[in-house]
Image (cartoon, rainbow, N blue to C red; front, top):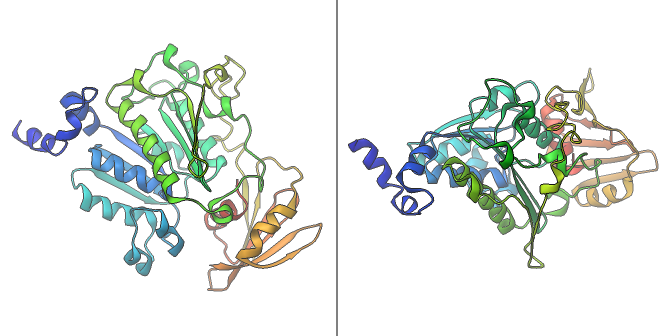
Length: 373
């Protein structure tokens, strides 16, 4: 009892809140969150939940700390940059200094169909720190199939969005589930109810092409954490069931009622139980090109895209060559396996060849940052 009392003392200001109290704090201290992507959103999420006293964090990120990350990715510093630290490991070390009672399982890995279920099965909640819709749909499939709350978030430029997802139980896998429990009446639309299809490659801005305002990241990630704390302390009715959309530059805050999107069997995921992203049917395909030190990426759904606006975005990132058949950019800031500049070639179908690496996860990361997914 004395040990529990001393641990609770750390969170005294939090347990004073009527919605949490000591019982809520105890529930939080026994919970586990999966944080997929430990960049801008992910670092704020991991730090906030860690300081709040969550029991364990499972962090998955494939990238290393870069100079341009330091403007907004709050767990990293110049020493991490100097050492070339993987983000997941750098986050683990920093979190251990912030709150040693929180277990942090760090995985320097590409989150994909091959490992997604393994990472998610022990988590009570799934937190979105991602920068691409392909992996978000994978998280959504996991949430629906395993019965896990999923808190979507995204931020680019000066805008951000977030939505809390409590999947309908109709297609939940037997034996799966979370410490967070909700009724059929409390279920919300899933991500695919609201966004049935991902935007085509190149049509959505990314942080690398449109920039990102640090405060918008903090606002969205903090909103995600606020909803997570409500769920993990058994305050289901306190969650915001609307979609948040903000633009900090134009001072606009809008909340959309998306409840009507939960429409029975219409949704291919929570309505029909079609987990095509989790089963790999809808995932983009990557192929290492033998002898060329290059990876080909083919998007899940091919269709003609307008190369001109993408070429305009890439002009400031490298030496550009463009014609009606393709655009090719020799990147200034991206270095290949042997230290040579990475070459990105993009075709009108969204297919791309990333030259300078034979690692699919590296190629997917470059594609997501400069083309979008």
